[in-house]
Image (cartoon, rainbow, N blue to C red; front, side):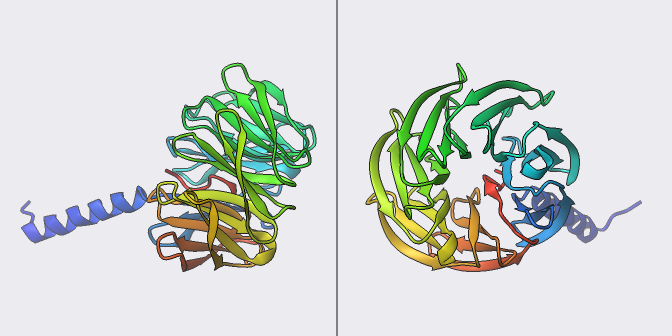
Length: 319
């Protein structure tokens, strides 16, 4: 059978476009009041699928290969595992506590960390058999978690202890504890593993720490009830959600000053950066939307409807 060159070219273009589209990064937004996760195709800026997750889904973490999404489910006493390719719930893993909140994966993808708000611990879970391999005592009400780029350290924001714990991932023990502002919650680490940024909800500021010894570098005032953080533009800008101000503060990481405040949706919570380093996604709890910020122009370029109670606490965009 003869295929006309134009027909073949059209077919190949369609295949190429479909493949490129399927490879686009996706954002996974936990909707706590809907018991669901919205999956956003960042290329089209639309929700392309929704996965039902019981247990008031809150925290989000993705495996390094982008194939698996982990969602903490405090009211289901554990976490859910989603197949990122098929957009299907694979299983729910019980941890025996309603305190599951912050969640993170190590750089190998082999270990999952889940903070327990009530037990004041971090569980270390094998991502093959989903069994708990260790339980690490930390401060009171651990929340945000972040792993260093070299996979050497896990940092934990201890909300009611007003501190950050540094966990040695070789020995799985707490190496260091440093006091920060009042009620730390979300935190980010730069791509070189040199600085840690901690959002302090009650003192309305961000603590900047030197990662090696957890020494305080600076404290930067932001707006009311800062909740979570993300870095963009090659770590030159830090974006901070301010829950009660319905805004995002932008901090210049060279001068450590607030250089802009961007209005977003009502009650912004989770925040994460697209792999392009330029677009920042913000989950708005009361608006049931995600705002997309251009980190260069410092403007909102899109607003995407999601589900009820969008929270997305953690690193929620596939890399």
